Length: 195
Length: 142
Image (cartoon, rainbow over all chains, first blue to last red; front, side):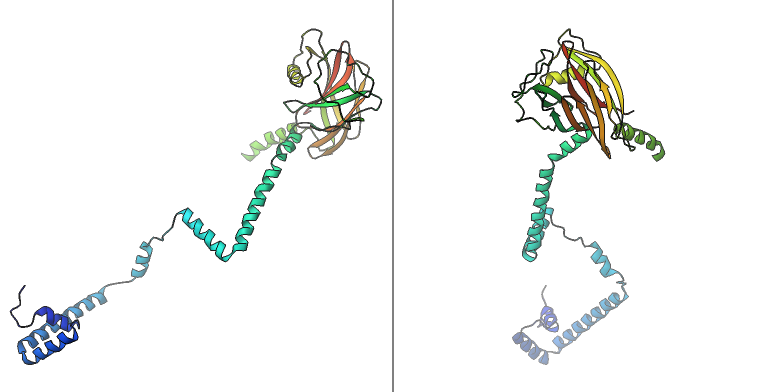
């Protein structure tokens, strides 16, 4: 777009907006002093600018901005990083600011796991005692010449069988039953056994 | 709903726990003769035969000679007489909650054990008529 006037409207507008360099502003103002046409155009341009500013300010004053801030904030979605990243950050923060608490917690957790592992093998035995018989003591008379052998069946029952004791005279069982080959009980005589 | 569940639950508890709150328990004492004469196994003893066989004690025949219900009161011994002339003395030593401790004296064997809700204790009771007697003690609900 060409301008037939001696000063382009863009330069006049830039002058009104204070965007001209000092040298260009000095040169323009020198020109305006001797050019009534450019002064008139500059005045008209300033008037239009003032009118537009007043109009926009009036529209802005008429607009209802009640709840505008809250509405904008409500539409914002908080950034939630992935779990791994959050754990990493948390671990890093605890390690930096509360190392004693962090490592103490890790130690307690490890101790708890070890305790559970240590106790776990005992649990079936306890339950077994409640469900099946549990022998506390098994013995034979000193003069019996036999020793007890305790066998546990697959079903949790207890078989108390008598076998000849090496240090005692033999006692006939009265049959040819096959008795398991069990080691002799501890000398001098067994005091009992448990399932 | 709760009322309908209460009675079965109580019944189940009473049946599951042989130890009574009044210090009395019920046991069933079976006297079984095991031998290698014949192959007969009385009804209800097949499981016993299998368990004995798996434990290494093999007899071909298992006969139930008697079945004696025992009502044990705390500290009062009950006697089970065996056909070979022996006698087993069964005594309830203590009752703690659901745990009942019983002693059995079947000379020359003496044992003390804690009763379970189920399961049996088999005690070799000496020779008898070409076989061997076995005293079987099992908790019973009654």
